[in-house]
Length: 290
Length: 198
Image 1 (cartoon, chains in turn blue, yellow):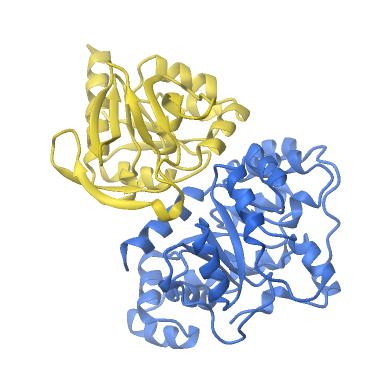
Image 2 (image 1 turned 90 degrees about the vertical axis):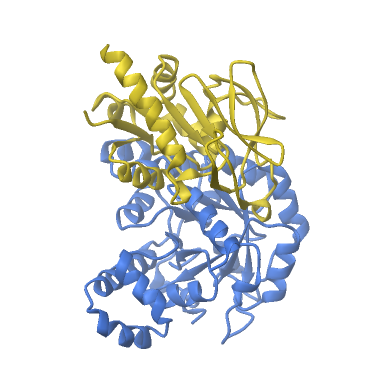
């Protein structure tokens, strides 16, 4: 692995224990930074609105992303469609800090993900299981997040994905060395990555929770399940009091084991985003990407 | 006598510092709230890398700011890396924010630009030979007061310094296998511990 990839994994390490918030304007970005976000995700529409608007959802206008870069000092991330390497080239040209190759946008390629090793800027990718996580890492992803189900305010899928990834890691840790070759074939991933998971008992990159996190309790749940930080998309700016909710989620991620503090943080936050159950939605974004 | 180091654990790369310090046989405590400070007397404090805006804010909101500032001012040895350097800086260039502000220097945040400006290099540390240095959206020190010793420079910018009980680096010693900076910090911790007993 080259030096640039190491530096890109290192930036994700600096984000650990933090909250990355979706923002659509420079003003929201300032509110997020002020509330304690460790990075912001710049996008034109938050997932809940993408979901209700329908149609094809694409990379955001670079002008809008640049206005957010100018407004805050924390890292700025932005999304590209799965497989859309030209959108990624554009984001690299405006010196984005992290690219999210995201199932939230409409996929541009139903077979191939972006060859992320060809880029200098880092990528974060979503995963539902360990096979997906390791495939993205072999393509050059420097950070992983659960897919969850974006724009729903329903945490059930993020929980399912985080539990599954960690169960699969524990299984591999307890697998005999001569059986790891078959595990690699079953998961459709390089043997070397399986061997690494067997030795270390964790992913070789930082792993955040994402998709459906709406409350301090949701954030604490994901941290206790092994997430190293959280993404909050629609949950903040679709709620009654975004600044207060954002601050509460930031503190919940730091003190995820302190139930007394979590109780205080959960008080009087105003209305949470309404949310939709996974059974009620026609489009499962988590199914996008392979 | 086992040494106990408190590692500020509100956000960022604190677990990497703990892993490194454990290799050096040190007992570490994660500091997340004031009660953690009361659990065991500390021989030293690490302020890790992360986002300084986040860490600075959480210090205030979790009521850690005053007790930690008191400890630093009472001469507790401190190692601040990257965001930790920003927390200790007496002044931040083009920014009115001051956190602990205990160290006589002017620091510049994100001095090398965005993530594309992050880099790794090797340079002399405290005239003791070259060590690997990883810079991630790093700051550097623009200028220091007369009471501050410069420990390392890269491309004519100050990237490590010491003033009394405070050691700062704009790079991340916790991200490489090299133990030089942590050992340098522990030497200071041991010196102070001896003076206290005497």
